[in-house]
Image 1 (cartoon, rainbow, N blue to C red):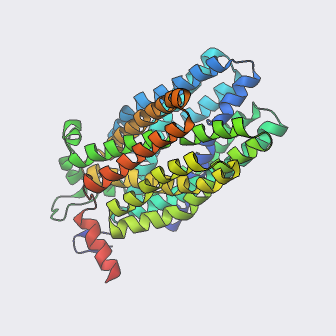
Image 2 (image 1 turned 30 degrees about the vertical axis):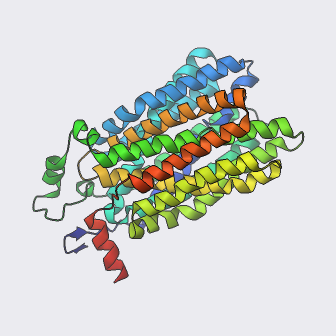
Image 3 (image 1 turned 120 degrees about the horizontal axis):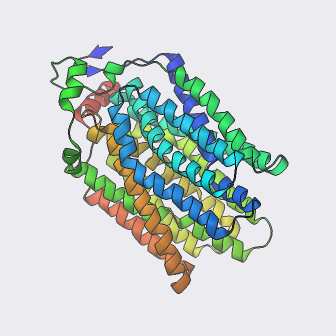
Length: 420
């Protein structure tokens, strides 16, 4: 349906539901490549140094692949094919881990998974954009985050039971198996490939020609103040956030005897529940209020959470404090692809922009774990939490004072139509 100069896409209910389940099952699959790898390798007599090296290979592969992965998705007209190849590569990675927990297969699995993930995330964001258009993207991204959080929580429970009562190896066979319904859900999604990019307000060209004509170079994107400012915000966000739970978990482990694993598990599950509940609200609010107010709200949870971690002595209080992590995670998970769509969604560089933001996140997370560990070793955990709080406060100030509003005239027109 077209109203004025704004095109409203009306995807089928089948495609909408299929994208829900795709997010659910992809989150299932990605959960298998989390803490379960370290436990699995340790059960096969890998040393902590060898496990750390293997995980570092995966982290470095993901960081290096962020930009080329996004560019590859931009270059492929069929976003479903990009997502399918990425899911298949993840299946191969899981099977390599399950078949042979030796050096070469494990390293190969980490490399494949790193690159595949960097294609899968932008491909799924591109499918959401193609399915609902820019006007409804915030709502759709909130829904994606809800289903992904539910999928992560369900998968963590299933894989924990599988690893406990079957074997650590079975976790990766389960991971590969859960990727198969993801492929089925992907095949059920149908969208108009010519509606993959939003239309300018004064567009007169055909959609396909318009998309080609509006494509900008990577150098144009790198000169965009909005992209650069938000990339800096992403670095500061992860500089504050990435090491926080690890630091708190180490303090809990040193300070209590029983129920340590239950407390740590609750610190992971509680934020997922908050993300599932809040993400749709975040998407809707970003459509109506704009991006900056929502970013300020989510980013403000970072310094508050770090200060509470520094002040709270009872380990059981860490779980309610982690609710703030759910708030910031819900905001960040929805806003990153939404702002990428604002900056580059109509210029053929949406997925490349997501890749650049992903690279910024990797840089911030790497600096966070290294600096927080160094400060904790030399000055204590309290000082380290205060340093993380300072980085979070800097992120809030950058959004408040420097970050421009990215919601464009198309969305403002649509929001005013809905409230009229």
